[in-house]
Length: 46
Image (cartoon, rainbow, N blue to C red; front, side, top):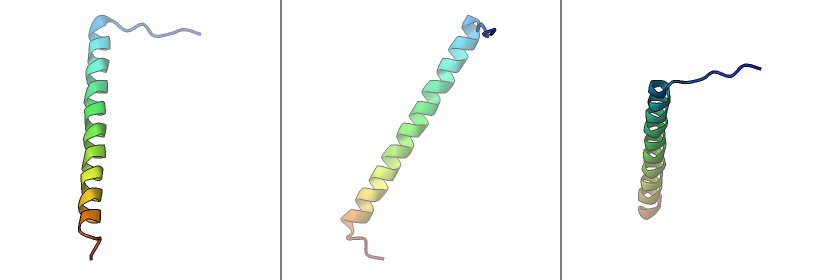
């Protein structure tokens, strides 16, 4: 089986995308956590 060899520019680009994706996912986790705290803090009154 052949494997694809990435050059340095491609590796750097992939790393940048991975970091950006990780930051976005962490932001969503924090957002959901804060929204949950607000809902529970208000006694979940609708």
